[in-house]
Length: 383
Image (cartoon, rainbow, N blue to C red; front, side, top):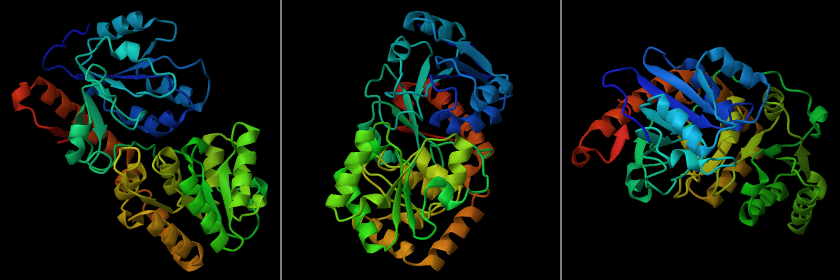
């Protein structure tokens, strides 16, 4: 369906998503949309988000980027509208996540389609995406054979971060339901990432760190909260040591998150936005690397932030490191200070640098696409 753009013109890039509002994807992506260099790339947003009016929809409107509403269009009509823009590259920010419309990308409305950000893995079919944006940690070159897409690697982390995300003073501990004293282990991941093995590890920590509590995101159904309390009791942990936090707007959530002492990672689906949130507010996170994209995301973020030291060897190493930090106030304070000091210097939170690297990667991808198939490299790197 697509038509090739004119050679030599500014790259036209389209982003396809239903998450152009106050959503985890925009929490990460917003700064990139604002930082794109319109002299290098012509950006189009293809939007089938629900009707919203929030801080993020207003920031998007203020960018002045081309915005196309696909909400009421069929897949065929949406693909036709995209094709009419004569893009070089269409970036699918959804993958197989809630609300995805593979019926649009399957019609091939652009000569190059990229799978990025929303779905941490391969789409499994070359018709749906030609390239996948990763990095040397989540998608090392030696994993290329396991992807239907050609790997395109960012130099640090594949995950963008908004340097203008809020950083407000924290509320009092009792205001958010925490005790005045005691170590706070926190995991604000969706609870569907939790499994019995990880919960065993978390409860071991609570048994071995006197007075510690586990701070979790409040489940959407009461039965889930009851189940977790019952499972904790079966593992020798009093139900009241589990504290559930309601969902809040991003600025309020980040302010309260800084009250946590240590962030607990999930596995094998590790922390994604929740990991960068924790690092942004200076809360230490210990992770480990698995063999899949999703099990390596938190490791990618820590490495991009300059904290390879927080990537453990295995689950037991994670446990021992978390326990040691929980029992050593001075070590924990020193680590928090280093994390906070790195905030404005590390590649992880340098939105302008990330965006220039991303634009360079788009250029490299287009050049790769224009190269004869037998001459193409196995992996594309930003240059």
